[in-house]
Image 1 (cartoon, rainbow, N blue to C red):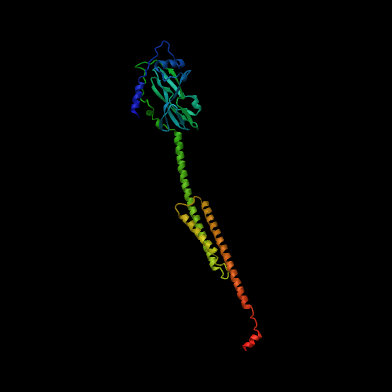
Image 2 (tube, rainbow, N blue to C red):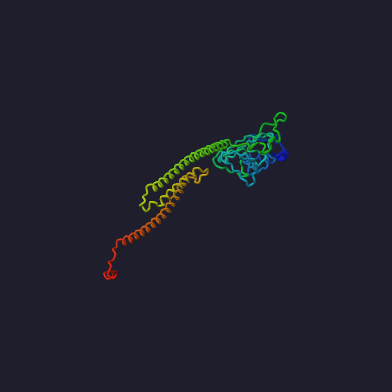
Length: 355
């Protein structure tokens, strides 16, 4: 707390006069009407500052001052500032007016009806004792489910004044002037919080922790299941690759021109590669894909790409084999035709010459 600020405020309040009684021949009795309120405001500053526009038939409208507490923090309010009160929150607002009650008047105040229809609930005391001097601090609770805005200078409460019995010095108990607490900080308003808001925040926090724990458990279970699936996929592809290799090696016939077709070995190698990929992914601390379907799509794309490549090279290989086979068959045909053709007969003249 600022001691210098408090000292200055106490010195300011000591300057206000506190009448013991009304010396006029005819004094009011009961609730003061507007003319009596104005008379006392002019005589000894019952309300300071006093604005005629805020004077009502039997009361006076108090306005929002330059300080307030909201959410456990004290704030300064500029002349054009706005106080925004969230749903189910409480705020403490300092009045702009200083109330200087004589010994023969009490004051009663409450939030204006306008703010009650906005959902604001008054949670302060209804009576101000005779002899009080200083600002008033207005605790207001927002009971609605929407944000309520209050501007600096807005009329926040309506105060009326009621006369008391005659004050007797030495017999009647006198309210100490100035009071012990004159600053907003002295009321521990920063500790005033909405129990409903605190309860809701605690419940939301607990619910958030439960969601986090549940999410962790679910992710762990999903990770375990995904690991099992990856192991199954890796084993399956490895077995498929080995089967393709075994079939190609043990069941191929030598007279078949394409028994050694590299497509079989490509497919086997692809199966082994995918199985290794799945195994590494299942053992990795950081998963390469967030969702299983992303990994499946990626593997299918790789598979399709490799299959297309295999088909392309297989077609080229088969075409080359066919071309070579045709050439070999053509050569065999020529050789066979040469062997089966008969030799030409030798002429008789050439035979006699030799003889």
